[in-house]
Image (tube, rainbow, N blue to C red; front, side):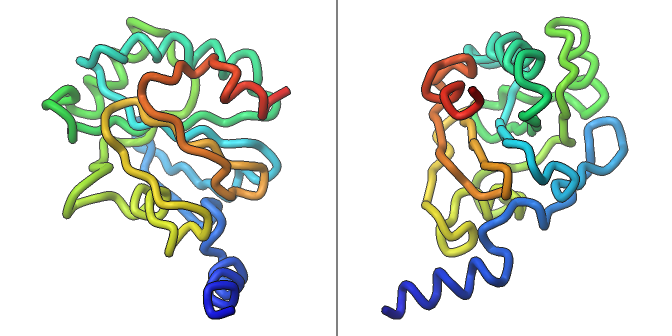
Length: 171
């Protein structure tokens, strides 16, 4: 009963929605997640020098195919193996030149550890998101959220963005 009350209070306080977040974009603007109400959101921690970096191409394909109902937000992070050492400008240029990324990119953040960004703390902590605990084990971990901004599922790096595990929610 106590758990149910805590979960209900968390949901009523907005803990279950990513829509309360605003973050700096990679190009100096602001990403306001409340503007994505009514669309699914895929949040991905990215890196330019990772074995999974080619997933940028599939993220772009996914975005192009479903952009009427899906927002993708990439968050460059240097938490794993120093695989994202560049500046925001360098990362943005890399994404444009090599993958033609047109989906939304946030500024570089920390997705794990003592300096974890508040959005990733929310995504990975059930006491904050009201749904599940999740661990980011490597670059290109994917968080899928529903149209109300609530977490649906988390996918590890090895799950390709075009995998049926993700696309089944977009059809």
